[in-house]
Image 1: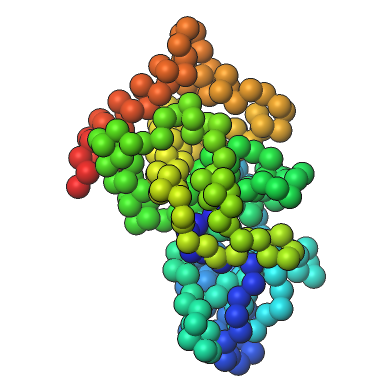
Image 2 (image 1 turned 90 degrees about the vertical axis):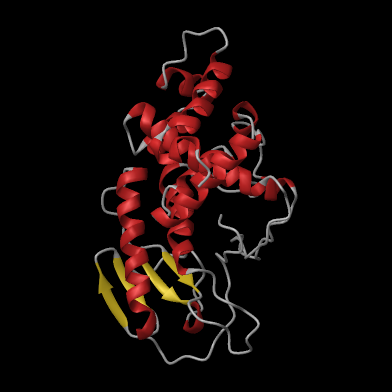
Length: 277
């Protein structure tokens, strides 16, 4: 889940009934002034679903929270998930909409849980996958501008030696779930939240950087989908990662993988060859 990003209920704002328009991914029902934004984010999310999750033609609707009683992720009459988003400030001025570019991040979360690793428990961050994998799926949906911010953060944390150690990252609970700071709406969807844990920005930076690293090492942008298959089959994820990255023959495999990952951050062109600029 993205920071300060609602994915549940939204306050109503003054609005006319929005017209419904068709899009390549489904339908959009938002204020005419927000249609271009909604279509842009929806197209990006559909493309990311193909690239990251290996979902070839996922369909969904995007609707404005100001005129809809639907909930995030509910199914439309045609069976498509519906993503309810606040595009404008509430009438009382108390609620500011989240940045529109976070919409595709939240769609990534839902599609990953909905189609790849569903949830069988209510007391967890997303689906039954490890929290880092759930977050990796969502950050991989983000646009290049936000990914660049995450990459710069990873470089800075690595240089400061404050990046979360890989072995811990692969087993940890999402920092905000551990801090019990993510409020849950009555129907189980997540509400907006502000980070309270100092580790949260590092967790997002790690999820982004480790995705980039795995793509470079395996040559597969849909590595998240591969990992999801391993989770569903009950395979030990650490062993799977070591095998997939060529570190399974080493006695200290996870330490070797961690060293490889850190060396990659320090030298890869995506990360400025270790520059924080």
